[in-house]
Length: 185
Image (tube, rainbow, N blue to C red; front, side, top):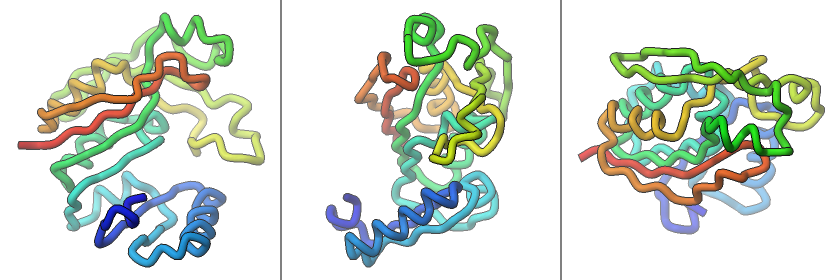
């Protein structure tokens, strides 16, 4: 979609080997000329890169992190614009969702601080999903989910003051989700 809309260059990182191969197949089938896909770790790349980007799109990434605030901070170092689609923690919604095993999430928040930003994190256990032959997303045994308000506050803490949300889906089968776009002035 980005290439069809005129993006001059698209650089994408995929951590999962099988999903990466699907990206390469899609690139070939769609005859994408300005997209480059790399197999690797998004965090490691952001920590070492000297590049800057017009926009950073992190779709389906934040909720797989063990330190989601770190990811937001690193994005703020390489781009003044961000779009994130992610799941977020909302205890009431998660407990009422029949698709989610009740022991998949911790009920108690862990208090965390990163670069002066204090926030709550809730452990999300991948459990049997790690045994799937398909794709479950995370490579570790668990990730940490932030409440929606903490995600918004984290973006503001790291300079993304102009925020717009969309596609808020509290009843998403895999947990509440939303999309947020932010820019630094």
